[in-house]
Length: 168
Image (cartoon, rainbow, N blue to C red; front, side, top):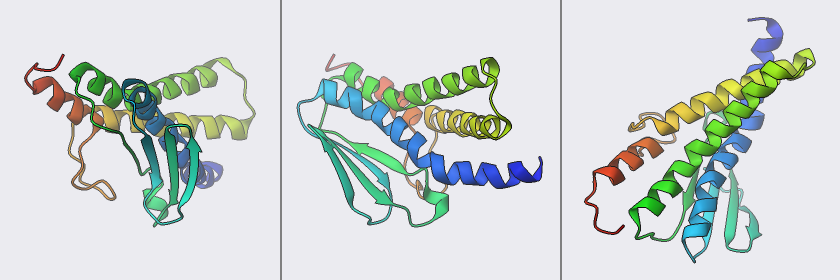
């Protein structure tokens, strides 16, 4: 890893992880909007910046970050969905969206001739989105801040699949 990589990878992480996280959370929010009639709130960040974007029933809260370590923090609030399949689609929407982003970045890296700096940026974005996919689709309980005490999307899906099939 060269000096340019040493500088660019952390910069790309700090600048673009909030965007990758927003895309992931929108992957949850869009099915939640489709499968419910209530408002859906996307929260990005864990501080108190309190900038809001309202698009019909979708509210995006841009909260800022307490530290650069937290730039991948986000979550979505939606109203109760009483259909197991719909709920699984809402939960699965985030990781699927992240997987699509990863595939698009990889396809671009393989098939498009990019200038050196852009190649490094796209490579970093691919790596970060691939890890984001893995860390959200694997059924795990998080042990690192700011997610301590929370479970991954994969864990939530597994829990739903284990529940009795009463509301399909």
